[in-house]
Length: 91
Ligand SMILES: [Zn+2]
Image (cartoon, rainbow, N blue to C red):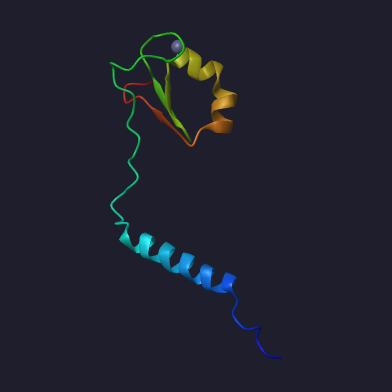
């Protein structure tokens, strides 16, 4: 079997791939994931405004909850959270 001769589409694909590789190589790998920090004493529950005891890291951002609301939403938090960071003073 012989390979099909290149067509206009193959050449355009090669140009797109070359441009992609050039752009990809131009990106410097300086992004490092930041470790989520525990809620501070100044952080307030996003539900009621009490002092936050838990930071819930979601795909789109963070939420902080007091102990009461962390317990109230525990089942949901466990299903959607990427990470849960307790306050350093939580007991
Ligand atoms: Zn609360």
